[in-house]
Structures are given as structure tokens and as C-alpha cells.
Length: 285
Image 1 (tube, rainbow, N blue to C red):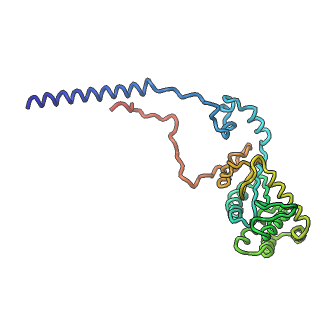
Image 2 (image 1 turned 120 degrees about the vertical axis):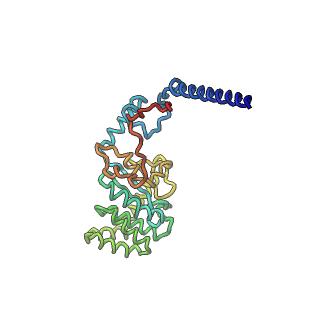
Image 3 (image 1 turned 120 degrees about the horizontal axis):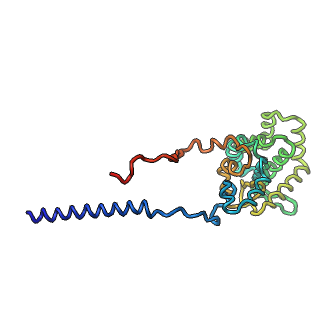
């Protein structure tokens, strides 16, 4: 019995020694052997960060490029170009909802809009063939005339697309939208004359040329977006989050007000405020 007690005593003593030794190692490691943060590798800084922080810009030698960009875009409207076709379901959904509601109505004062109603059509020997048939060609042509003659064409085009999506004809949807927006008769006459004549054909040829000249990447599908006339295939995912992209790309003294509310409906982390420390050493127990 006494032998068992002696053995148990030595086990407890040795265990406490091991625990104490391990604690000392942890303590020494945490206070003595923490490595300092590595310096920034400028070759690995994502391009979107290059011009966002003055210290980073200077540290990595981005000043010349960032200064050039800043001077060219300072307080200038961001140009947003959209390639689309009138009977493409995804184009209709995008124009009626995401584009009109989240971009046009919220950021209209900060953006120069360009809509190009041509999409995946083909221009064969001067004759345009549309992906969804002659009906789409007629609507694309009509949209081109609306964009050419109407001072504020985008709400009208959204109106037409919404009614066409619901099954209305070109003529009936246009008539309803003329009434909705109180379009002046002479403007309506110009648009109708354009859509039924050579001017509309010429505008469609221009839309075909505009679409074909997208640079550096040609469009692969619609809707397709260009920022400041730059067409990048790998950046088309931004079409599903245009407000965030606009807030990122706009270079003005004052950011669009709606940038402050982006993400307000989603859960956010408050973070831990800098400067607060526990009074008690975490290693004391």
C-alpha cells in the first residue's frame, strides 16, 4: 500500500514539473520568439490596391501610374457601357431590375451611360441577323432610335423591355411608354420615322461596329459591360455587383452617397477596437 502511495506521489510531482516546463516554453515562445511581420512584397500587391493608399503607392513605386489615372478621372463621370439585345431573357431581367433599380436610379449623377442594342447579332454583307429573329432586330432598331432622339432614353427602354417581357408587341409597348412618359409628339414622330427607315438601319450598323470594336476582349455573351470603354472578359462577374464596382472605380472628391449603404442589409463584423488590452496577464492563472 505504501509503495503505491510513493509511486503516485512521484507521478504527480513529475506531471506538475512537465506542465510547468511546458508552460514556461509557451511563455518564452510567445514573448521571445514571435517573428516580426514580413515587409510587403510589392510584386504580390493586387492591382486594385495600387492607388488606394498613399503609403502603399509610394512604397511600391506606383506613383506615376496612379497620378496619371487620378488626373484623368478626377471628378469625371464613370462611363458604363452595356452591350445587350432586346429579346435575350437575361438582358431583359438585368435591364429591368439590377441595372435600372440599383445603378441608374442610385448612381445616375456619377455615370455616363451607353447602351448598345445589338448583342450577338451578325452583320453579313450589310444585313443584320439577330439571335432571336427578325422581331428582335426590329426592337433593337427601335431602341437605337430611342437612344438617338430621346433626351432621357433609359427609362423608356426599361419600360419597353418590361412590357415586351410580359408578351406585349413592339408597337403596343412603345405606345404605352409614350403615354407613360408624356413624350412630345414630334419626338415620337422622329423615333417612328427612324425605326421605319434608313436612319434606324444606319444606327444599327453603328451599333454593330461599336460591339465589334470592344477592346481588349471581344464580347462573348450578353449582357456585357465595359468600364471607361475597357472590355475585360475576366471582369464580367462585376455585372452581378455593379454598385460595388462603381464605388470602387469612381474617383471623385466625394463618393456617391449610396456607397455608404452598400452591404447594410448583410451581417457585418464590428471588429476589435485598437488600444484596448486586458488588465490581467493572460498567462497568470
